[in-house]
Image (cartoon, one colour):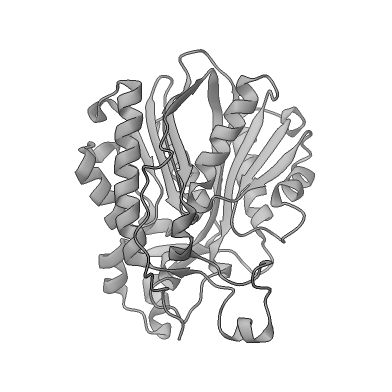
Length: 346
C-alpha cells in the first residue's frame, strides 16, 4: 500500500523573498464555476475501508465531485469559462489572453489553455501555469499585469483540475482529500482604486519533497514498474504541509494587510484555498477574521487545487457577497512549495 511521503528535511520557511507589492487599475468583470455532477460521499468510500467520521474530523470533507471518464480538464475549464463569459455578457472573441492554472493538464503538450482557446474561440496567447494550489492566484496576478500594461484588454483566468485522476485509492491519507472542478475569472481595466491593494507570492523548492507526483516527468519517466508502484499518484507529508500552510498564510496575510493599511476586521470576504477545514480554522483563529466573512466549501468539493479559490468566489458572488468596493482576501498554498496571498478591492 502506498503511504504519504515521510520527510526528513527541515520545514521550509515562507519568509525568504517575501515581498509585498501593489497592482491596481484592474477589475474582475465576472466569475464562473463548474463542478461535475457525480458526488462521491464519504459513505461511498466505505467499500475501500474508509471511515466517514475520521474523514470529517480530520478534514471537514463530506463529499467531493468526480468527473466522468470522458471529461478532461479542458472540458471542466470550458464549462466554467462559458458561464463566466455569459455572466459578463462578453463574447469569447473579445478575450485576448487565456491562462489556465492546473496540475492535471489534458496532456503534457500542448497546454490545456490552448485546448480551451480552441474550444472557446478566443484570440491571442494562451498558456498554462503550474503552481498547484496557488495556481489561480499566480494566474490572476499574471493576467492583471497584462491588463495594467495594456498588453491585454480582456483576460480569462481559469483554475481547473481533475484531481481524482492522480490520487491512489490505496493511499488512505490522500485519496479522500481531492475532487474535480473548475472556476474562471474575467479581468479588465479598472479604476486606480480597484485591483490588488497588496499581494505576496513566492516559492520554496526546498519543500518540493513534501508534496508532489514523483513519476511521469523527465526526471522519472513512467515505466511498468513505476506504474505498479503508484509513482503516477500524489504523495504528501500531510503533517509538515499542514504546519507550513498555517504559518505561511498567517505570515503573508499579516504582511499584505499591513502593506495595505487594512485591519483584519475590515476585510469583507476571505477566500482561502480549500485544502482542509482544520487548516482554515487554524488560520482564522490566528488572524482573528470574523467567521461569517470566511468562505468554506471544502465539505462539498474537497481539495480541488487551483480550482478551489474561484469555486469559493463564485459561491460568494451568487450569494451577493461580492459588491463594488468589497475587500477580498485570497490565498493559495501548495506543492512547490508555492504561495500567493492578495488583498483585492472588487
